[in-house]
Image 1: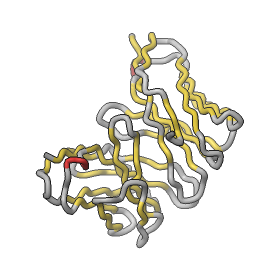
Image 2: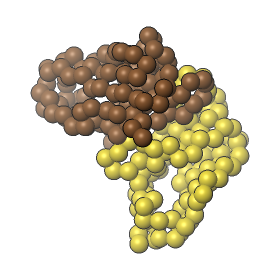
Image 3: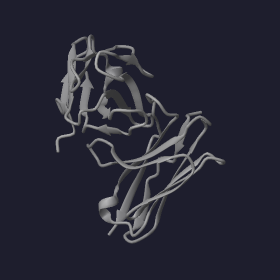
Length: 111
Length: 113
């Protein structure tokens, strides 16, 4: 079993929809949680970086962590075609950090 | 803003050839990383350098060597390329202090024939 599991998709939604992307993790030591966005033929770009449980909002993006259920979510409001990309969740336990990445969920927002 | 720059962007090698992938960052970051990304496998850490002068193995180091040339530059070398090393290679860096997020370059697409 991988330490961070993510549905590969693809997920197709109409423009303007609310998107929910999810990951589960198995390592109880994970305390830091990240979402990266990766466009085709580009490197991962950091979207959200959170510590421990709770919500963090940045514009149309909300990251949510539930450590009791080991569940990580990213919500995208008012989705745009420019949000079409692969979204990677990632976690680490702190320090000089071996970050564990999910395999990514491919999102397509249809105009 | 350049951030993390990787060269080359694409390369085709024959089995047994050697190659060095270059990475440079201009964010004054202490830590640097090399990953490979394969379909269905996600990003896997090859080597990392927590600070200038130190390097450590990651999850998949076999067949690779690294050099932390200075604070800005971290290179990855394939001494004798194998088809199993066909992948997209990403370099990343993270800032001073613990728990800083990693920032990635745009990758080198490497094919070994």
